[in-house]
Amino acid sequence: MINGNTLRDALISAANNLANNRKQCDDLNIFPVPDGDTGTNMSMTLSNSARELEKLSGATAGKIASVNASALLRGARGNSGVITSLLFRGFAKGIGDDEFVTSKNLADAFCAGVEAAYKAVMKPTEGTILTVARVASEYAKAANEAGKDELEVFESAIEGAEKALSETPELLPVLKKAGVVDAGGFGFVLILKGMLSVFKDGIIIASSEVADSAESYEETRNAAGEFDAEITFTYCTEFIVNRDSECEKEPSELRSYLETIGDCVVVVDDDEIIKVHVHTDHPGNAIENALTFGQLVHLKIENMRDQHERAKHDADNAKKKPAKSADRTEVYTPADPKNPVGFVSVCAGDGLAELFKDLGVDTIVSGGQTMNPSTDDILKAIETTPAQTVFVLPNNKNIIMAAEQAIPISTRKVIVLHTRTIPQGITAMLTYDPDTDNESNAIAMQKAAEAIVTGQITYAARDSEFDGHSIKKGELMALLGGKISFVDTDLEKTVMKLLKQMVKRDSQFITVIYGADVSESQASAIEEQITQKYGSKSEVTVINGGQPIYYYIISVE
Image (tube, rainbow, N blue to C red; front, side, top):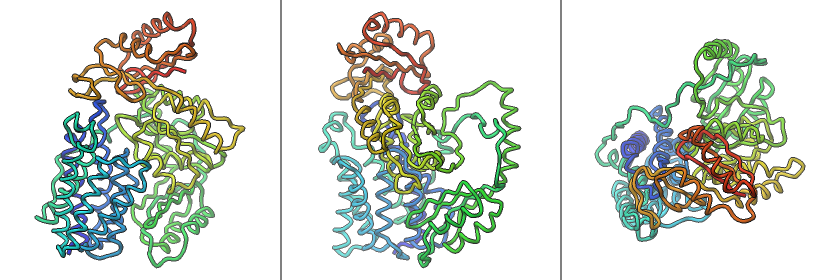
């Protein structure tokens, strides 16, 4: 039987194995946009859990599986990360409260994980990580029924996963045409092999990465020190309660108590933990009350008056230095939901951030193709938006699932719009009517967003054969509605050729958003060409979005 410490080591080994092979996993992405998608998202999701697991020792297998599931959920990035977190959330349910991993609960864990993942995906696609996990569970179940021990059951699961992975090109023609297997399925096999190294040989695969570059940011604006804040309570107190299974009290009781001793109270819970944030003059009282619900971990108490003075000092010094881009998620302070409605938008680029704020967005989460924000990033943005109902605009198809995972763990009512591009998000915000109820607004905003066709111009990250196009690394790719329309090497010609496909006789508005790699003079030259050709019938607007990856993002209405 496998104890808690062994399961912990196996999960850490899995995270390391995936991180070490992240680029190989990324390179399997059939869409050659340089988005660092599947491997990066899955790796960052697992790394969040590994940091939590390293702190545990002597816990049962059930406890380890539960902590892993909770950390993965909060750290989930992108669709692949969310699906991975759901697989392990079901896995934890299969292990239950057992002290050891046995052949039976291991088989149950694989099956429960697959069930959880398939239920969460609206339209499951075979030939993906879902198929690989499902076949792995079928092999695990058969091995258990044949009387195999837990190691043999796990090896059988890997056998099934590898077989299913090799067959993914037969289920998805686009994979077969590109000559690759599914990236998510490949990542899942890496996870299982990382775990097997511990189960079979007792060896934790070491991480070969010093730091995750996606987590590295340049110095940013110090907003906390740029104004004189009125601090009512001195201590910012944060902790997580590992819930006592015998405690019958509800988390709402803890929240009610905290509201009597402070403000900015945030209490978020699931079956295993309660996450707490409160500003108070009596952190000891908050801790004592929380201890009646379970054991405390990740305790942090900071003096906000002292923090503010230091932030003010840093802000004063920063004004003497050249400004740098603040292209990252803002540092949030929890806010009371005083307004009926608020908005959270995901985007990358200072220009786009300012544009969304001008349209009424309260909180910006930095992210997009180069970095998908986690569920926890989006949850923090929701909780710190001063509104009872929060609309979330992901503006990227790979962020929608992560945003939706925040719905059940948020203290606010959350409405996630399925905006897949920046222009769709802009249109949704322009459609919002403050005199209409939230449900009607959600329908109208979604309908308006779906009517927008987006054109995008980026570059190929590698040589590729995709959808009938032979693409060379570095070539320009024109995307229309998310699909490759054509490739070229001249940027101005690419813009005009793409617009020719997009503009119709009744088109009234052309909006062009240029990115960080396009100069003002280049943008002005493009604007002049577009105005000369289409300006007599359509209103042309050119915006400096400052976004990475995409030279131009274009919408026509």
